[in-house]
Image (cartoon, rainbow, N blue to C red; front, side, top):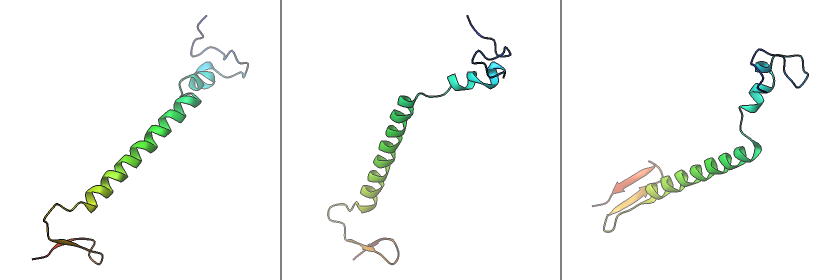
Amino acid sequence: MKVGRNAPCPCGSGKKYKHCCLTKRAGFSGRQKLILSGAVLLLIGAVVAIAITIRDYQPEGANRVWSEEHGHWHTVP
């Protein structure tokens, strides 16, 4: 039997179903939260690794030096 949104909650709290157990059913389970957080951490790690690779990339034959003072590459003639 389906409980209506405005009906009293079957858990016995005395609240309406929409303000009690309905919101609990709409969320993620513990396992889904764990998988989602792992995927987010993996994605963040991949973005950081790509950013470091791009920052440190120096093409073959390029005459460039990294300037710590300025925080970017300088072309050396």
